[in-house]
Image (cartoon, rainbow, N blue to C red; front, side, top):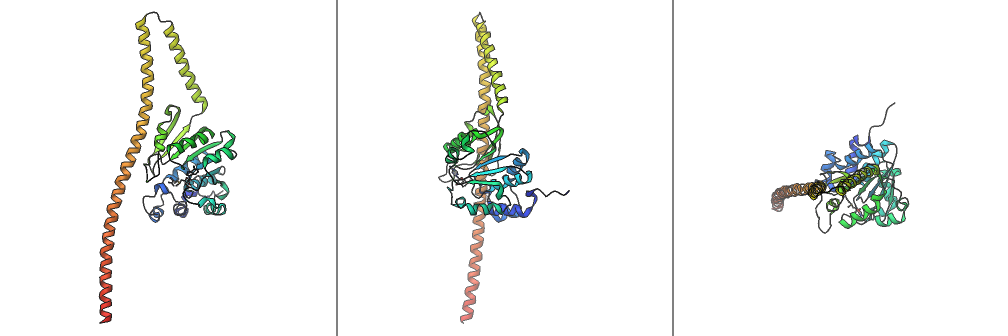
Length: 322
Ligand SMILES: C[S@@+](CC[C@H](N)C(=O)[O-])C[C@H]1O[C@@H](n2cnc3c(N)ncnc32)[C@H](O)[C@@H]1O
């Protein structure tokens, strides 16, 4: 029996995705160049994640032209199960507000039947639309790529993070991005407030950053909490049985040392996140400076060519009139 090739091996489709689903965050060259190199960048990460995890429900909050949605949906099509829910309030332009056009857009990639579109602000969707308002965790992968202010990310995590199943993933795009114009990009600041001890997370430092956070199964967390509680109880019992002060102080100091080590590990994790963000921003600043130099060179070349063409045309005109 022959099986169809996985979607993303087909080069023509990759070109279509880059041209029409527009990966804004990773376009640091012309779309035509990106299409020629057929590099889907983060799109491959979205596709791989969905192929590996075989999710039933993926929720994407915010997408300009559906790049993440298409890459996820192609994986679901190759898996033979699952659905992508796109929530977008059309804050950038009205692209998603025409339901018919939105459906046709996804048909181009053969995934229209796998995508549900909710054209409204995420908070309203969480409060009014089932299954989001039902408080039953059902999301396997959640991608936040909408309001990047700290307040916006915090609100979206409060509403939708609670709907991610144990062992599911919360993904944050633009986790390494700095402020652009008047848009606040504060995803990294939000992430630094998470209690990292409770999560597993990794940041891919490409295309403005993608941070994947796995919601640990409650049983793992519960066991950990139980272990810590037992430790505290036995320490207290030891302290209670202690008759001489110096021993008690020694115990106390050891306990404080352990909790300080825990805090230190959490701070180090936050430092790593900021260092990653800083490295990313320095690299993109250097890339921007190089692009500006190249563009200036091209402009000079164009101007001198233009002058030469102008000169030739003028002398031709003169010859014709003589
Ligand atoms: C510009 S896209 C993000 C692009 C992405 N970073 C990339 O690299 O392709 C952000 C989308 O989020 C949507 N959006 C912003 N705030 C929102 C909110 N509160 N609820 C739903 N969608 C929102 C906007 O309409 C927009 O389409």
